[in-house]
Image 1 (cartoon, one colour):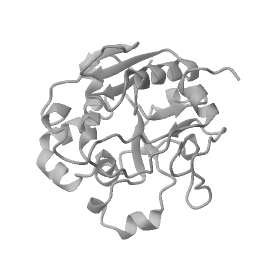
Image 2 (cartoon, rainbow, N blue to C red):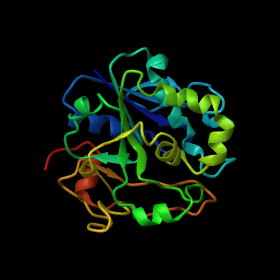
Image 3 (cartoon, one colour):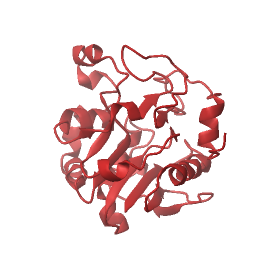
Image 4 (spheres, one colour):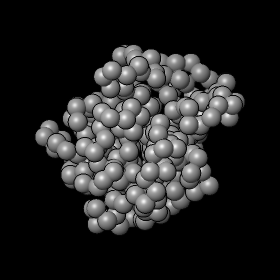
Length: 253
């Protein structure tokens, strides 16, 4: 059994983001699965929901709007999902700003090992030439993570027990934490599975932006609606008809 989980808190994402993600999983995952959204507001959601566990410092209410780059701390909560939800089997966390447009049933086998998406479009020289605490973005991309049973529970407890050290060092996001503190633990999700709508597929060979890549499985489109911040990514309305068709759950040609 694969247990898919996502998180919706506040008004950054409308219910449609959760519902469309749920439909895309239904259309593109062929094995048995559950789908649960941790949220502070289940109104309008079509899937199973659970309240976001009230754990300080991971629940958004303890820090949202205070620290610029830690809005995604709540992702660490999902690594204890087997205890929150009581399900056995494999787990897959997905961000809400992704579009699934090909079959992802291989996650059933991939999740036997802990795996995380890889930002293959990043310039490795740039990452290594700059101090990691001064950048947001690493090779690891927590938009998609999968694991088996309780393989990742140690990450949840590491963040709880070493909170101050971790948030001083990796203050610009969870991706930095996964790359620099858990690098030896994670395996990569195959590089050709994902691409960035804003950055392309692979550095330096394929960096064409705003392009639908038919042979890949997942498009990350990097929504940024945080008021008062300069977006890291250039914001563009997705107008690609094929991507929109998949996002709305319409798999017909």
